Image (cartoon, rainbow, N blue to C red; front, side, top):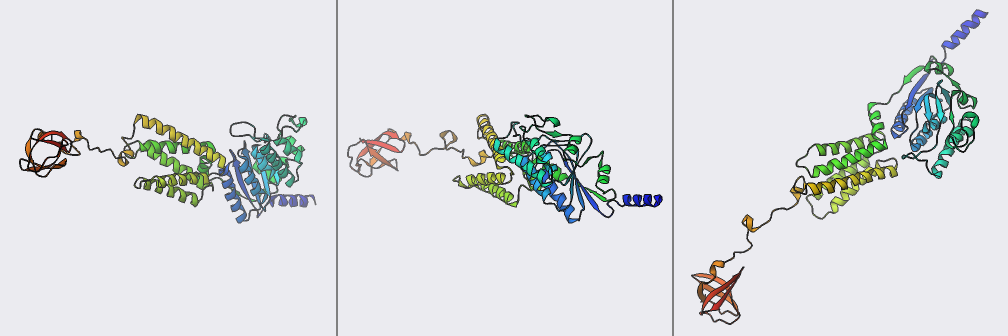
Length: 426
């Protein structure tokens, strides 16, 4: 009888998860829109393929609160069991993501917590943002049946939990043992194999998902610091190109930076075709401005380009600041280049009229007949005081010094002022 029990036990163990499929999806590096787009794609693929379980292997220091919120909503709406396996750390936004899954397991050295909201400049967010984030943490813990006091302590340093290393004034960070003790972890496992055994999925089909190259590039390019640099490089390169003869390295750099900006935001799902269409319209209008005077088309074109950039941003405030920085770079570079180079090179030399009809170049507005001074002739018409005089068979418009001169009277040229030939009666 014992042998039969052993055989049944072995058979049951070998059948753990047989015929089922498990998707393994990594959550690594910073939490941002690129990660959100990756998780949307992979979880959709898991659902469509009929996955029986999704495991998220988490190792992140946190990131954007807005992206974490979108990811949390995504996880809450999944209709298959989900597990977070914290292989190193799930801090800040990472802890929120973990709390939105059905089960949490820790690696022996993993940590979770320290979820206070920090601004991009390293300072604490305002009370409104902190309060909203704390409520999200509490709600996510409650949704999975976990005691919300610990989620609150992760986001609020005023909660006093000295027994877990978080006295008042410090955010709570849970290690594996404490997480199991407070019910924030189902267990501690050494690796994925042990985790699958704990979940009863040892023999399930494993499907590992990784970001595509495009998604990896998009995650990098949609980082606020990176796209701020891209926009600044684009503005600087295009401004320098305006002052350079031909199309060269500055223009290539500017166009490339702009392409990279939109490429990353399109792949991440931030920019749609409407932003691209608006960008192209703006570029066409600016080019048309070079041939149509007035300035209206140029202003509309600049507005269209700015609109396309703002439409591509997830955070309007952050994108506005990045566009502002790029605009400031463009102004400063324009002033420096104008002072050093002027408008004698680049595109400006084709659109600014520089030809002058000067005397030095052989141009004269009228013939200056100085050679007529002293010549004698006859008044063809009466001079009252202007009329016509004839000098050696050449008839010339003349004017008397003021007195009346009858036709046929002899006259003499006494002064020439441009086209004004002054005569007196002889």
